[in-house]
Structure formats: structure tokens, C-alpha cells
Picture (tube, rainbow, N blue to C red):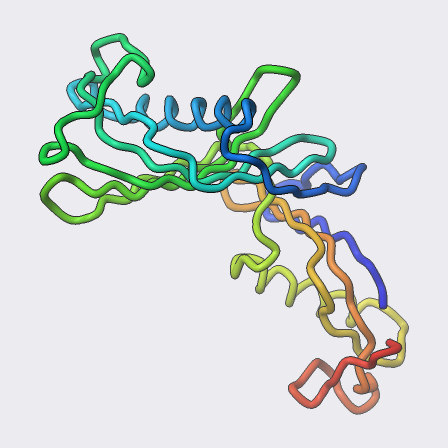
Length: 225
């Protein structure tokens, strides 16, 4: 089994990882989690029209931290429409919830980076807002140029990994083809397209390059490959 770190170029290379990132679940009452949620919710409210009502935190439902060369908080939280408009100059902490029959509600998923001891920057955020009457509205934010971790199960990685394994097989002198093993970690950067930084394993298959020019369903990974 081989371990590879792939720097996939879409427009420019990402800085490489110098330490292995470690992810851990966090208590939703963690102080830094609250600060990260505060940054995300303020970013969401800043995007609303001045005449619109701000949204107020209802509860945080899950949170985790990925610590490596940088620290990122990933979390989900629920919000309710407040009684303060964006132009009021108030923060969401100063607002009360609107009456239930009038208030829109929502759920947001966000990743926020921490720099130093107190600076939190939103890398990516998606919110689904349900108006008091009407269909669900989707709001998405991606920080241009920010590097942040993504799920190793993300479908966005599939074409990148396929290309990477194919490139390895085409540019090595090994007599057998290799297949994807396990994706260890992945990060993405939003620029004019996407940059990906992925660490993954590959395993030798039973298909020789002499008989198989590329991987097929007949190629099986060897346990000791």
C-alpha cells in the first residue's frame, strides 16, 4: 500500500500540509464553537437586505474541530427570524424572536477558520431558509481564496482522484496497475475554479499493465499490495 499526497492544480497549487490534521467532536456549548457560529451568523445577516429582519441563533446541533497547520470548526445550527432589521445597527444578540406565525426559520451548515486566539473567518456556509409562508430558500457563501477541509466522501473528489490514480499508473514503471485505497483527508480552495489537496492511499491490483492498459472492474486490489 502506498500513501500519496495529491496537489491537484485547477488554477494554482495549494500550500502543502506540514502536519496531519486531526478531527474531533466538540460540545455544542464550547466557547470557541459559539464564537465560530457568531461569525457565521453575522456573515449571513450581512448578506440580507437592509430592510430585512436579522436572524437569531436558536440552537447549535453539532460541532467538530479539525486541527492541523490551521484550525477549522465545522458545525450545524438553527436560526429564527428576529424582530430587528439589518439597518437597525443591532447585532443578533440584541434581537428577540419574531412571533412564530410571522418568523422564518432556517438551518445552516458552516466551516469557519480560526486565526490566532480570537479571529474567526467564514470559509463556507449553506443555509436553508423556510419562510413563514412559502417555499424553502437556499443561501450559499464561499470565501474566495480560503482553504478549508471537506469530507473525504465528497463526490467532488471522484474525478480528481480518478485522474490522479490514472496519472500515477501512466507515469510509473511498476508492472501492475494500482487502484484507489482510502482517502485520508482533503481540503479545497475556491478560486476561479477549485483547488484540491488530497492525501490518499493506493493499492496494487491483480491487473498487469501488459494485459490491461487501464483499470477495469476485473482489476481487484491485492490484500498485500
